Length: 88
Length: 360
Image (cartoon, rainbow over all chains, first blue to last red; front, side, top):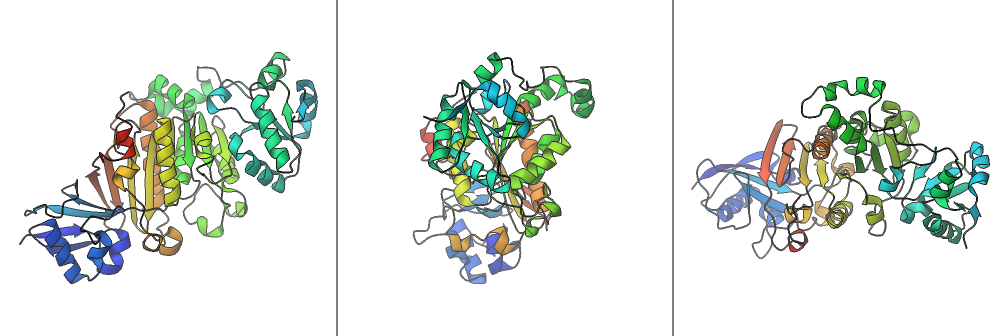
């Protein structure tokens, strides 16, 4: 299991209270499951019933956009979760 | 048939300061316009005139190049119960009659302008040629709020030739914690009017064109057309998607920023084969999961940071220098004081890809 730092977007801070949290998983899907164990409900804010990343949420691993929850994670990978913001 | 006024009669009427409206496109206006006229898109004219007359009742004169489009605009005003007249023969007849009009300054900067922009001109990447490019540029800022305030201030200071400002709101006391274009004394005034006062005072070289309307699917194309760069400084998803779609059709690059709390996002949509806003976020969040700054709060200085970054990218696009933030999303967090750069993946199924990549 790889333990990684995950950046949480502002609108999901109500779950984590922290901008950066630790989570573990061999794949992106497992990492999101672990996040959900720690912060119940947060996964469904990011992923829909068909396991697709929601259209207003984006996941980046090492700065590159990832849509596949099966994407393998390695030590040192950084995970960014980004939500569309409207404020101006 | 719309009621007309001959050029000589309008010249005699000008000292009474009628509401003088130019409905030509931004490119036509660049060749000269009547002193004191405001450029308003034909689709926005009823809202604009109704708002302006509510603040100060006065006669309304509309003109275009030949009198045709202004005649249609006047008919539209009359249908809305507003008395107005169209300049017979338009700007061309006015010029032919030898009546005075304002010409944009010649292609050479005046001694005062050379002094004003001397720190720009000294930069190898800008120089005299770059400063002249800025003077010829037209930039539209959608929103005169948190992001639009610093963006417009720096663009005006930089000597952008025409700065368009669209905002349908009025200045509110709760805006002043971050919207630095406005002042306490101007609470209740339309934000575009307040913006025009501040920007013109900062740099009288800049032609500030104001539109006191909300951007809609009906008026967006007319309002955006003719600009070189659009600053998306809006505050809602509907407007952001509308700007993206219309700017793509018109091939105008958009400098996008959005903020909430202590967090901001910045990117550039080039409209030319690179990812667009829909590639980044295919759809907005459901309303209940998308808090606004009004609901969730925002650090006052945050839009200051993102808005000045927008101005930076807009200037780079006009000047054709550096590496614009195309296909890259900059995510800023003020509490961690971190900037992270993320790569936006083009969406092959997106309308911007279906239209086909363009070059140049």
